[in-house]
Length: 263
Image (cartoon, rainbow, N blue to C red):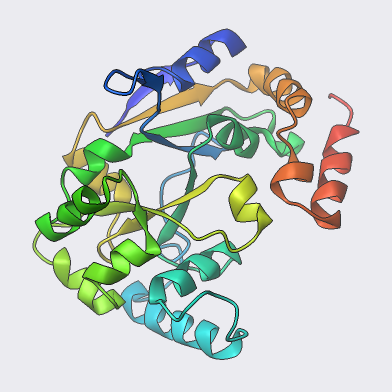
């Protein structure tokens, strides 16, 4: 499914995360990878919706309809289903979206935020969204080309498919994954440099898709013995709960972890 690389040092980790980010046409460093950090190397890429019991495709419609009904109507700009889906994922509703980030350091935070898991190896998933988007239906590739973009906004998806059934219809014969940058609904989304993956079906499995499309994704294995060093260096770089979860809750989480003694 994906190449696995076991990291041996902070320096190697840093080099691996930024490997391949040089963009020759621009003469700049512009990574085309999405990053996802997990505290346990055994974690898969299942969405919160797939982890629910039952027929996920049917549950999805009920969950989103109820969320839209009970949330404040000014919670999202406009009434796009894609804005509602992003907001729902952001607040913990089970959806077909999966959290990623453009920032390798934010991904590192999510692989080292919990000292209770420092006895476990962690991992960073690194997925090339430009190569993934080469397998999109033509109508979606045209939308990217028209906007000279590498990832989608909710408005771009809405122009092609204004509903989940219409979106699913695009992938009925050939499943695909699309990367969606959510609107700046609050500071947390902005500070985490958030990005979502979106499958063409509520029941589609991203890991199955990656097995069918090798070379698009790699996984960096972070040994448990490196987690304290990584965590301390992230804190010094101001990558912490205090920044990524603005407010008193994030501050309290940061202070609790920061003053946890090394065991």
